Amino acid sequence: MDVKGKDQMKKQNSFMLLLSKIIAFKIRLLLRFRYKILVKGSEVFQNDSPVLILPNHQALIDPVILLSQIYRFSDATAVIAEKYYNMPVLQSLFKRWGAIRVSDLEKGNRDTQVLKVITRSVVKGFRRKKNIVLYPSGQIAGQGYEKIFNKKSAYHIVKKLPEDVRVIGVRITGLWGSIWSKARTGKSPDFFIQLLKGIFYVVANLFFFLPKRTITIEFEDLTSFAKSKALLGQKPFNSFLEDFYNLHGEESPLFLKHFFYSRELKRKLPGKIYGSAREAQYEALPNDTCNAQLDRSEKSAGTLL
Image (tube, rainbow, N blue to C red; front, side):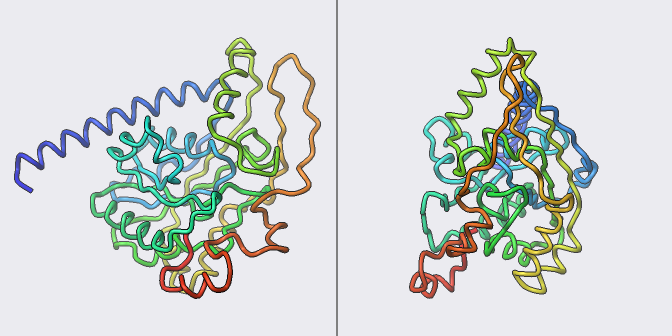
């Protein structure tokens, strides 16, 4: 690439960074209507080296909350499920942002090359000094704690990390029981339906009286431990991450009321939660394999996430 081309790319990157920070700021303002967000450990972003950010995944809204907070201190791009990446309104923005598109496991997509695509794309991003957010579980939690099951993407990527890349763990608590989690219906909620509901609740509560949910985001540098555990194999690595995410124990669901003038909600968890650890006791682990024959044909590619 010639000097002129590099200058144009630099200007484009600067514009996207500025745009991302503006969007993140506006999102933080909107989130204040419903959430009280506490952030711990933000000093991990004071280092200029690229980072792999590995959060737990309680609810559909937590990537929005997390990224809006990260842009207070640094910048990052994310690995995004294709059903969101391919949206006509957002696809161009995601592409310019450098987001990495992957198959959506919960919709049954089985791209056997996805593990290679993720690893290649993430490593390429690190060479460009990007910070990348990857969810090791690949799906929102089906219980009040994080379970990675047999997912391999985080393990494979950490094994191949360049020397200068750090690993940041993110522990998010407070969203189990929200409309964005599986705790309400036992299934993954529709993002845009919940978004419309959220807007309605804000307006119905006269903007400032909506009961607030407290969310805690804890950042921690896991570089040395994560890399050493990856050398021991996939299971020790996944167990290490689960221990980090579940440090505070199983979280009880909080079914927060939606109107300041209504009574406290009295709900129970649904009898069956799709993708939960309990369901996995009776069914195949939620990885990329549909059956034994498919598993044998995909050994070279590994599991999806």
